[in-house]
Image (cartoon, rainbow, N blue to C red; front, side, top):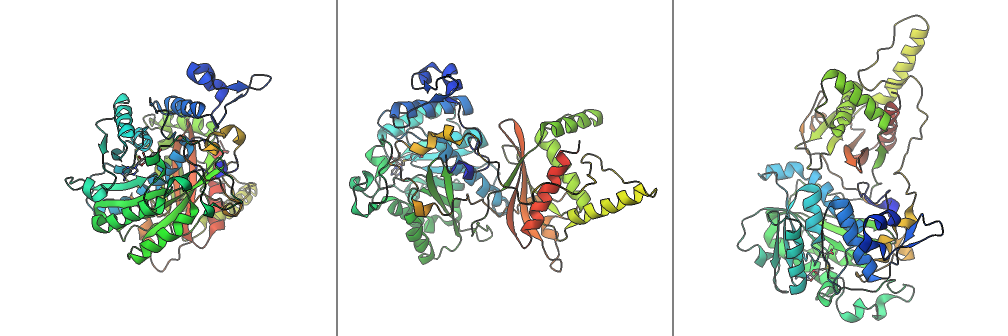
Length: 524
Ligand SMILES: C[S@@+](CC[C@H](N)C(=O)[O-])C[C@H]1O[C@@H](n2cnc3c(N)ncnc32)[C@H](O)[C@@H]1O
């Protein structure tokens, strides 16, 4: 699928589309929707068949997240890659907001609001399962509300997720009236359309070049239509946020139409809300957009588009090397993420790259470091090491080997500007392409000119500065080469290192540093 490569790097389906044949073997309910190629090695499903899509979402939630859900026939079927992209964006924003939260005296327990949870209650269930977030979920539609409540208790999440039935005209202000909680964020997947004609794609402004939705929508009227469409719906949240201010850390919404961004950005500016940003959610053949705003002045939201983080899978051989070393030195209590991050921290220390670690570690045990080098020591270091090798060869001083990451003595051979790993089986992930039940707005040709996932930035939320200076300690007289967020996390049982550009003047330097660290992974 064309856009899968721009999925959020932590989206578990980015490089790992579901294998329908394998799922069919395990789940007989799902098997009835699967057809096979001649050799029966590959399974397919019909993305235009709502029953098949409903079963796929339920099966994936069970298989990949351990969640049991029931979705009624006549309600929206949430597709997972898009929902995960939104959740991961919130994770990134939360990470960038770490310090601001602390300044606001936050307890550290992340609590969000999902406006319009739907029957599946997908965002609260995913957010709670992946990140232990608590949620207040609102829902206007009585049927969806009942299903949402049941789906929460079916998964034993009632202590973490409260589902509240609200009236259509009951906004956040009313919902939070008798509530003292300070929320970290709110999220919303609003009804896209202003009326049923627009929902059916029959409005004259739809544009003749634009194809009709490729799938049958199972969404109810409340799920598709809101007064003023999504601009009206999100506009009301903007107006309410003017009163709620910092009661909610940051406000977000997903948008189904790119054209909705402009009026919403104009409204934010008109209301004096300058701290806002937008992003793209790319998956399958569909794009969606995200908008975020905050009343926290210190929280710098990402303002411009940036490349996706450079993603590197840490080789198994290197992990084995670290574990062996840990076994010898009594460090076996460390997780694999900790072992890799400790080794990288040691390397950064040796390179004298100032870094600051986010604290506390995120619930998914990801370790994030904000790097703020003022000098390119990794290139110089290579030169120095080459010089030392030469000297050693000439019978002079021997080269010192650092403890864990043994430096290479050759010039690096890898390309300097690595991009995210390409998707190998994209076509298998038809899943999000059809967008059943969401009144799909397929990507237009002219929307497709910039398909890069915007990465969230502003992760300068450190609490410790191990070994070297902290990121904030770079003195004004020293010029920053760049600021980047290096994170180490576990994705699908593998350890992944990501480097995301934040700001600065030396992108090549950051790419070189990634190559340098990568080269250490292969030196064991
Ligand atoms: C597009 S659906 C999204 C459902 C779910 N969040 C998802 O992403 O699959 C929008 C949901 O918002 C609900 N809704 C519409 N207006 C609402 C309002 N004023 N307050 C709360 N929920 C609302 C609808 O009933 C519907 O369930």
